[in-house]
Image (tube, rainbow, N blue to C red):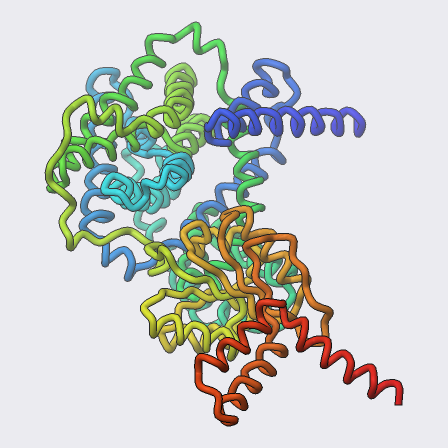
Length: 577
């Protein structure tokens, strides 16, 4: 039995790896690979995997961690700054599509209102994972359609919380819903108050203590424990685990640990989400493709054509230019992760007939398979309908997690001690933006309070480098003495930007560094200090500034070799005595 389990897991891992790799090769989202893995290895085809309580809870953990990271991104000041785009347009999009689809299903197919609202909500959602990833790769996030899509996706992520909370209640019937809803809302308020007090006064202090140990392993374990504890409190109160995780993320999102938390938890989240999408793929019966091709085609056409048309009209009504509105509508014209989750939960809770929900699930998945193509050619598709001449209003706020989301052509500073702060001051005085990363929690807290652009975290973490917009940076400086850590940072930088110039501090009492990278420049502070001292003496001795600079540059040109030979000879002579 044990050997059989290991073989099944091996088949699943190899199959999922190959399918995800193939999706990356074809420019598709990894979600498609996970869905295909669940379909192939699920009970309907190869039969390697079957429904089990363990698999269900592991998949649920992925959704919990997803909602936790969404909570990290959620910020009331940010939301209010972009309220017209996020609350106005995003709220109208979710509400209008949900009600239109639900009304049509209730009127034409006589589907119960509770189930119709669930399906309508699934149709309203788009894929945050696919859209933001591909728009970022295409450099379109800051374009008009990219900003519109990002704002709408943000509201969809927020709207998923009440959908997931209310979903189990819908199974009790519309008549009993009002009686159940009030106690549920009171419980939600109580849980929110408890987590708000805890997140405001206890969790930041605990994280500061953990951060001061400088143990990244302990920090990561603490964050996971906090997320799961909040989810457990919510479940024990009779609410959804996702609600507690979202609230905990929202509380921690107000601290300066936010980016390091997201960077640490992302690998676990992505792995668990992979299992979640595999579990959804397992629920799709491929026979539905032959039994109900007309219903599936109707779902796909509604998502890709009908949804795009409605969204275009809605976006235009908010005053956006025709071309930007059309491109944003095309970008959002697909199903999403939360749509899949809503339908999958409805299936597991038996809220409706599987013969109805299976075509919806299949149509959502097929629309997500088509999404990368629509995204890649959104400009060409929109161009078929003419060019818009208006531009986005200048006062329209961009959606961003912080000011760093709009950074471009900036200098990254790794290590923000006295040297790093001095570098930033000089660069800022010359109108060059800087962003620092440091893992001293107290220093980051104090400097952020003074308005400095500094993130807390490990500079060698790839997710943190992605958040710091390494691809858009103009240069980087590494100012700490740990050469092993410095080399790890450089290796991660090169994953994002192979041509980024990097100034590396030569550690004291270390042999001269020789980095096999033409874009890495080693700065020897000890040699440069001696050279500047000598230059100042040359000025005091009567040489003019040009002569002193020429003498100093001559030493630099030969990599301080003359200066090193003199110092080494002096040390050798002193040791021989």
